Image 1 (tube, rainbow, N blue to C red):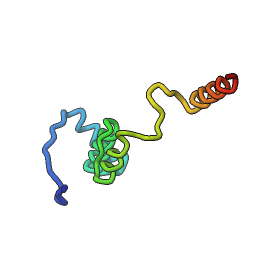
Image 2 (image 1 turned 90 degrees about the horizontal axis):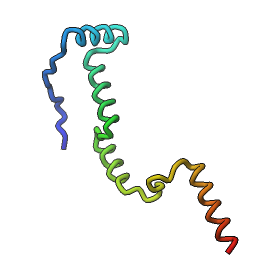
Image 3 (image 1 turned 180 degrees about the horizontal axis):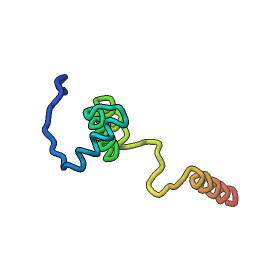
Image 4 (image 1 turned 90 degrees about the vertical axis):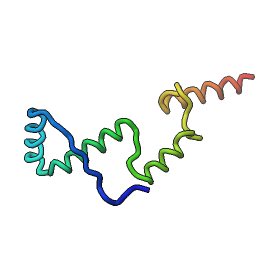
Length: 93
């Protein structure tokens, strides 16, 4: 179970990045902590990494999706055309 206490880590920035972050912080009226939280959250989403228990459970149930189309199934419109094509062939027989 995760600790309720936040973990602190020291991160080093080059001078240009630090200046850009400071300007962004002022322009957006957000603290550097808020910007860092947003950036790390976006990075985790990009790499499909869950951040909380609820999200972890949701992702674990999606590992074997029962009703999702298989690989290469294409768009919903392509799926509908394939279904119609199969039903037409079965009527001909």
